[in-house]
Image 1 (cartoon, rainbow, N blue to C red):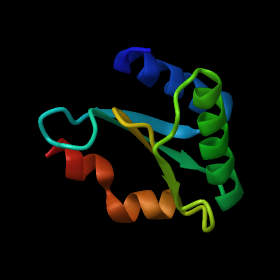
Image 2: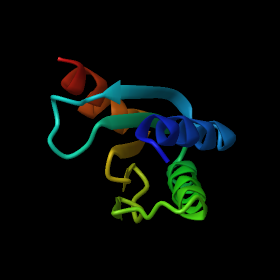
Image 3: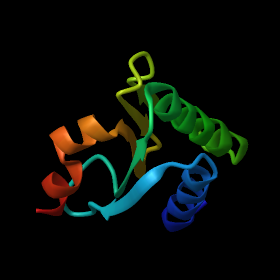
Amino acid sequence: MQTTELVSFIQDKIDDMKGRDVVTLDVRGKSSVTEFMIICSGTSNRHTKSIADYVAAEVKKAGIAALGIEGQSSGEWVLLDLGDVVVHVMLEDSRSFYQLEKLWSA
């Protein structure tokens, strides 16, 4: 699966789980570890964990192994590393505090 196809696939899976305020950032040339970041919000700790778990399961079914998942225990900010795409599923408070969109858009 091409990177742009993977981005669309992940966006679709986040939508399936009612992830909110989905933003995709092209960080090629800004990051040496990934090409795209997808950021979305969940409504609760359980929701953020569910979104991340669902995306991880669906990409695995598609033959793509996650390189790592962090933050599942708290659910405030779950990071799913898929190599060329990193997915951040965050609670609104955490998202407002860290302002990843602002940080990586600069």
